[in-house]
Image (tube, rainbow, N blue to C red; front, side, top):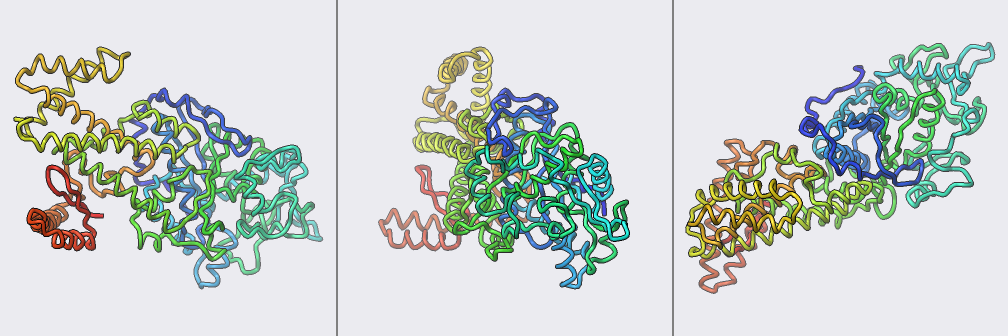
Length: 610
């Protein structure tokens, strides 16, 4: 198998647009599981950030519990990019382990074929839910040589031992000697003198500790760890002899015997390969703290390599308080959830709370996400319609917005350990401000005497006023925005004596609305939720005033649908004028049943699809 799968489309042109760190980057603080503290983020290499996130063990189809971690660290990555960092993002694929081998044998499959099939399923789920492709996506089977080298290094340094048979020949079993590493347990703070945080306490109550033996229903141990030949119950497998049922293709010859890798060794080998000298952040689900990440940290550092500077763990998706997982029988597959909800709604639901908070999954969670989508999409569509053709911000404009250009309450929330809840509140504050401007403009436009200019003339005047405002901003960088706007209005009135004061107020509102629209979409894009970006919108139609996907067939279908619905709206308006509200309500209800939402405005009724 290939060493590492590179993405076909990284979607990270932001890095090229932002070569300099935003001032806001100095305010970023992240919580470190290893220290139990939230502290300023200081990258190892200035201007760069290296992230390694534990990916999927591709034994079967993904469920939303898997995808929650992927979405959480996608948001972390996007925020680092928005701050101006050049991010190297690694997400591994575990394509060989006991479950893959056993399930493949039961199904009569080649183990590697099963692994590849489900790897594709995971990739499709990531793509569907807007998770950016990693910079590199290495497979475990592509790095067997790296793992063997690492194990030999641990043996040479006295931190690992080989199990031999009665003749002194290596059996293929190699264990890490926990007693040789005095720092073992530091990640999960499993020492009497240290205190756990609330999230860690939840995980510890539900999972094992280094002093406990037996199965963990949330994160079962490697079966090789139960072998009686190891020196101590705490020791864990680095390499393990094959089972009789293991096919020849799942066995590798090594100086310490034929076998295959233990569970933890691959992440140490691959993080060192791809992030040597810039390993800033290690991410993964909360259930990986122990034993996986504790063991990984120990073997990496015992080998003389640098482990991650910061360890970040996303909390679980729960169902009625229980961790969601297939092994417990309460996992929801991604396709089953997407069959009932749009991908945008599912992503919003998965990423709508701070990554360290448990996420209770329910119908109410999805209902709230759907409501958020309607509020957001209606504002973006209405603002674009109000501003006119060509005024919907382009993708390049959205990407060019730096963290310093975003509302301070959004930036402060994201810098506060990626507080998505606070960031979302900032987005809806901006949307409320925008809706107020739209309502004011609609009211002004309904009075024909106020504005003697047609749409094209208003668009030209808006651009001229925007230029005047930009010049005022450059001239008075240290005064309030309100004062700058008053200066711009006065200067514009001097050079446009034919434009009434009320129209200049409308121009101000239009410029402000465009800024709020751009800011809203830039904030949403930071969370992977800009409705007009891929994958939510398959074609780039920003700047055209269109809300459809842009193909000729789609536009023709939209025109036909618009004609049919407009006919119904005209009939409804006629019924309302005749005070026949029963008929008007029946038309509205009929359209609603077909997924059409009607909004009544001073300038007339408009429609949108839910």
